[in-house]
Length: 395
Image (cartoon, rainbow, N blue to C red; front, top):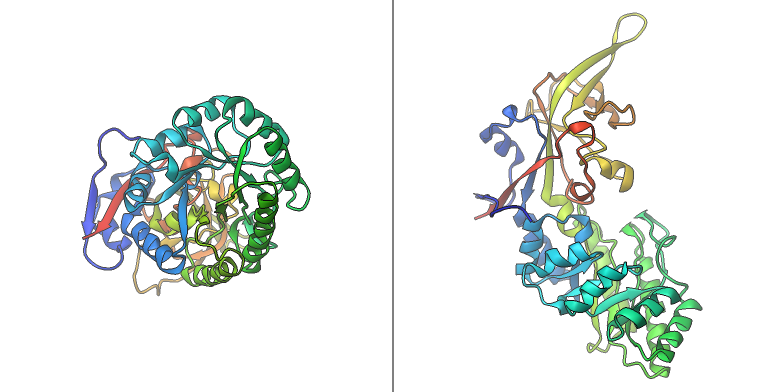
């Protein structure tokens, strides 16, 4: 957690005006890139979730963005949390979140992390193979086992099935039988269709499989009452989210009409992607001309790159868009442009074949929807600082 309480600036209106923030702040003096975080965007997303998915409680995926200011806000809003490690558990528990509002949703946990969960009474945790079942039997026998099965979307930004999830038709039943023989509690099932899901039918397929496993658990004598439908919800397309929500609600009503079953999800990017705009400064410029001497491409070198916030291009398959702040009318001539990060590595390329006005050293570029899978992975490679963050909230 950061030392002290970060300053939060307040604004009038329904949406934070990034251009106005830039005009009113002395960003030209900064060599460091800057995140502009609109906390009210997170609040609006929470209200939208409650409106469109009223039965399903969101457990925020901390790995997506572990900014303590955001985690604290979501804790105050009453969200639950999906944690993957001891340090994520520490962060969330530090905001007085009860253990019941946490799921330890990493199916393969180090023993010391498992023991920390046990000592702090975080009972809900996922499991997807027999070795982890034996590990739980030895180190946390009174935990609640939530069997994670594989059920991937045909279209997803980041598929996860190669790493996590057992076969729903064969392996899941075998794990439940093993848990029964070891006198362990199986309280529910879990799946993840893939981060950034684009296939509406994916959730219905998975929820139907979960229902079959609940029926099998009942035959074994388990009173299963916990369903985790994972993540995959978009963070910058509310219309797409509404379509997914409609599909999920229909499937839940069909397969899990009994409201005694607690249903949760693990949204990450949904809450934070749109809340962050990254503002970078051009610190160098280069013009590339063709053989006849005509200007072909303008190269710009920024103070953040793929080893920093733009790691999302490599790891999250994100396509970023640049927004200049030279002229609100957008009538300036556009030139073919290529954007580089600050490091000495030629792999540090942010975007190419863009068309931007002719800019100069010291000018600023903004990149919206930069709140998901950016900061937690950023590193100060080559000695370049990771961005600092300014926080804003509507009055």
